[in-house]
Image (cartoon, rainbow, N blue to C red; front, side, top):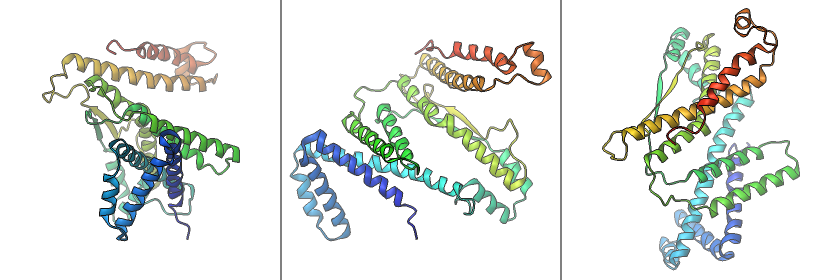
Length: 336
């Protein structure tokens, strides 16, 4: 039987190898790499009961402070890379289920959950009524203890994207070599980047970092989630979500949490709202510009033609002032 997690093990092994290559080149040759490998081997042996933790302790105590810091960094980086690989593998496994129509739905998916509800006696009408009534509000809050820099988060995102490139079966040998070189470059850049912010973040810094979650993840993930919910609901009950359904909504404490922090002032809250408004306008601008580029059709409904007159491309004519308004809103905000 094929191991469904083999590709995860392969990714972890590849990233570990690239990190080892980085240690050899960027630090002090083989010395750090050998120290890391010795600590790793002793740790594994001690956990299996074939070595003494005391030997591991002596090995660690023999390291100089700079070498001990480098060893700790190496293990932290490896665990971070392994986490990236695991998160990517979750996506890959979900795609495996979706690719094969002959397999049952993935455990915990909408399709699986709805099927089990119906099998337990829940009426289709009741299931749809409950799904339509969903109101999940995700509240974003600032995390002053978050020390990982946005620069590193971006590099981690690129590593995950490159792992996805490696999943393509049609990659040629030169393309696969290029993918590995780019992975090696990102792993090396991550090692050479300072992980810790050395300046205390301001409340506005925290607002900016929080809004990155919308820009990089939520803006694309939430529509996919709602489409998946709608499709599974149609298959289970015969009817999907209404057009105005919004099962996921958002709130925010960033820049407005009055918990005794003297740095969160009314001016900070105004600036936080301005930044959020700017981010929303900028994201919508990208989408509406893309939509306007697509809608080149000359025919339209009578209602639309009544609003656009004799415009040759009525959809584009209708969206032109929308784009202009969004551009006016997406300039650098009054409170940067």
